[in-house]
Length: 370
Image (cartoon, rainbow, N blue to C red; front, top):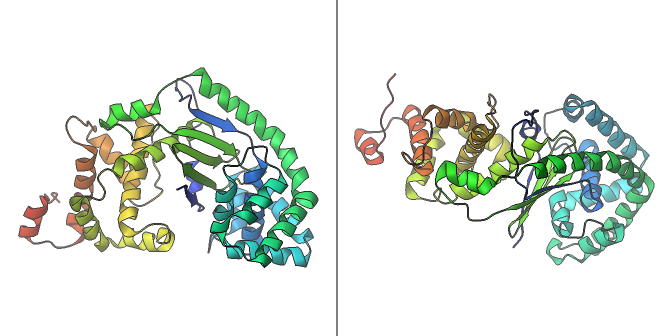
């Protein structure tokens, strides 16, 4: 079954920024970058208009400031979103609201992601309305047909074509860099960890008009991700490292020892607080503990691969875990990734709650000196 997940929060601003130089870096030829395609950008941009004018998914954050602080082009895009919404008549505004009140944008994209890249507006609308898994009412199907055809003809077609030319040129430049060099990312990760990834993923990246977030899809051994205009070639590898890291951690994060440590981490007010504030809808708590390590490890892989130094966190413990792996000069011949992960969290657990000597001995936890 096809899996899809979406990251739509301010943290994604940092995931897609940071590295500027591509000098002396090799790249995996199994990565392909494409310009924007209608099947993705039509739905994404309609949802942006909905999000910026009807429902702010960033809660207390100012959407305008997020766009404005990202780039000049991002600020211009935000102005176009607002101007377009203002020019839409009330009937179409209501249809737009109903469409995205009823389903998230990724539900609709999940229906069309495997269409050909040259899919037209008819293909997109017909595929969504024919998708039984969406359980669309007849009224909602009508809204989808009327709104997306109207939106495409009256507003989006010219804007999309205008931006497509520039982003296609960027895609060509990135592909040239990717194919000038050739390295096996899966083999690199195996050398670092002594763990052979279960799959050799094929990555396809599509430029998106959305400058502040990206969406990621997975089916079979294919990973499809949208990227922003500011994405550079090393950012593509970061996404690849993060995806492969999920597979590595999934080999041990359901073990009793790791789950016991997760239970102890429930006493970490900082970890629990951020979990409840930002991602409790996307993860259970054990997955949240795992995600902190995955993000830290993917940072470490990027450091080993390109020597890029990190000094910011996306979660609570990701930067700490990245630094921990650097400090111990992680060597899988001396300590496995599983043992390194559990020992890292155990060190924090000893500071969080009072544990009797019997439990400490049982868990093999050593109290750190003050």
